[in-house]
Amino acid sequence: MRIACHTLGCKVNQYDTQAMLECFERAGYMHTPFQEEADVYLVNTCTVTGTGDKKSLQLIRRIHRLHPEAGIIVAGCLAQRDARRVLLPGVRLVVGVRRRGEVVSLYERALAENRPVCAVEQGGTWSFEPLRVGRHEGKTRATLKIQEGCDRYCAYCIIPYVRGPVRSMAPEAVESEARRLAEAGYPEIVLTGIHLGSYGRGTERGLLDAVERVQNIPGVKRIRLGSLEPPTVTEEWVHRLLTLDKVCPQFHLSMQSGSAGVLRRMRRQYDPKGYLKAARLLQNAYEHCAITTDVLTAFPGETEEEALETEAFLGEVGFARIHVFPYSRRAGTLADKMPGQLSQEVKQERTARLIAIGNQLERAFVQKLVGSCQEVLFESETSEGLWEGYTPQYVRVRARGRAGQIARVCLEQAQGTLLLGSICEEE
Image 1 (cartoon, rainbow, N blue to C red):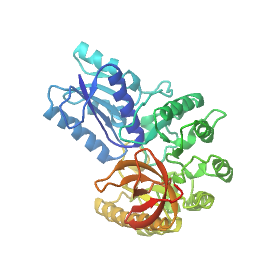
Image 2: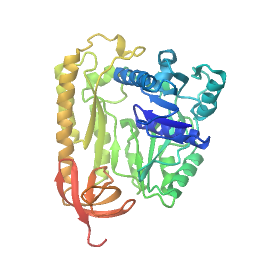
Image 3: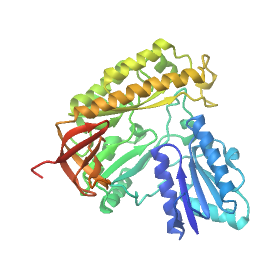
Image 4: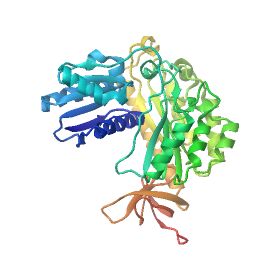
C-alpha cells in the first residue's frame, strides 16, 4: 500500500503530518511523492484563514477527481473545526487534531467497515499527544513539537477553538526525543509549538527548562526557537537565555500590528512600547540578532493612520524578515462581528505596501552581515558546485562546504537576500 501526504499551513502541521506518515510506514505502508499514484492520500488541513479553508477543500476534491479509487484521510485544523464540511466524496477518515497517533488503526477500521469514519473529538480532557518524528528528509535540522494549544483568544484567531487548551510535552520526553534526533544525525533542533512561550504552564517548569535539557545533549550544535510572544521576553528571561549558547540569535517575535489602537482591538497582551522593549532586549543581547515577525493588516476598523503607524514601527524595530497576512474573517471569533470590515481592495493594497517594506528590511539586514564571519550549517549542493546553508540568523549562504558541516564562513557579498562567502582561513 502506498501513501502520499500533503500539508497546508504551519510548521506544527508539517510536524504532525510527518508523524502520521511514520505511523503508516511502521505499519508497512510505502511513502510515495504526492504527485504520484497512491492508495492513500493524507491531507493535513489549515483553517487560520479563509484561503486555508479553500485550498484544503479544493485539494480534497482534486485528489478524488484524479484518483477516484484511492482513500483520503483528512486531518488538521479545518477537519477539527468542521468535520462535516471535509467529509467529501472519497474521504474515508476525518481525524482532526487529536488521535493522530491512531491514524492507521482508524483508517483500517474505515476500510474494514466500508464506511467513512469521523474520529474528531470535541471537548473532554485534552492531553499532550506524544507524536514521534524520526526523520526530516533533506534537512540538517529537525523540528520537535513540545507544546500544543493556546488560551489567548485573540479577537481574530480561531486557533484556540480548534487546537484546544495549553498542554506540554514532559521535560524528560523533550530530552529523550532531542537526544534521539541528535543521535540520528541532526545537529540543529527547532523547538516549536502553537504558543511556545506557554510551555510548562501549570507546572514549575518553563520554556527555558526545556531548552536547557536540549542544550546539554551531545551532538546538538544549534537550538532554534519557534514563535514567541513579547511578554515572554523579560530581562530575567534573556539573562538566562544567554547562558544557553547553542540557541540561535534568530527570534520570531509575534507582532501583528504596530498600532496601539489596533492591538487593543485585537486583544493582544502588549502594546508597541512593550513590543519594542522585548525586541531591544534581544537585539542588545546578541550581535547581529535577527528579529522576525508576522503582521496582520486591514484588521476591522484599521484606519489609514493606524496602517501608517504599523509601517513606521517596522522600520523602528529593524526586522530581519516579516510575514504579511491580510485579515481573514473567521466565524466564531470576536473580530468577525466587529464593525468596520475592510474591502478586499484595501486589504490587497496594504498587504502589498507591507510586503515591499519587508523586502527592503530583509535586504538591509542581510547587507549588515557582509564583512562578518558566521557559522554556516550546510544543507544542499547547488548547480555551481557550491553548498548552501544557513547562518544562526537563518540567512542563506553559499560557499564551498559539504552537507551537514558547520563551518565558519567569511561573508563577502550580498545578492539580495543571499550571501556569498568563503571558509575562514583558520578552518
